[in-house]
Image (cartoon, rainbow, N blue to C red; front, side, top):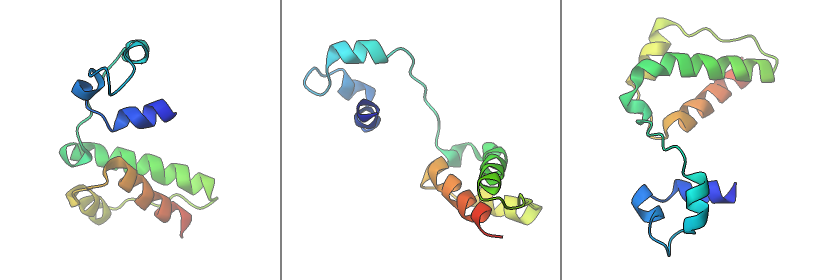
Amino acid sequence: MRAWSALRNLTSEELRVPTRFRQDLLYRINTVEVHVPPLRRRREDIPAIAAHYLQLYARKYHRPEPVLDAATLERLTSYPWPGNVRELRHVNRAAGHHE
């Protein structure tokens, strides 16, 4: 996990600089590179992600699953989500934890 944490903060170009990261380790873990655009560029994904986390946290906290009405979905999809999916997950955790 420490390697992954260190990797998240380096660009692929920085990883190729021998003094920034062990090249033998990079060779072993650099098998697939996935570029995921920020959530603000994938607004169509927000309802499915929000529903997933609402269901997850409702089950975890033994609460009824909240229903996302049209107004809530509009607010969720219009928000810029600077914290990305992590921020959306946090908002859904709070909603799943409270009635």
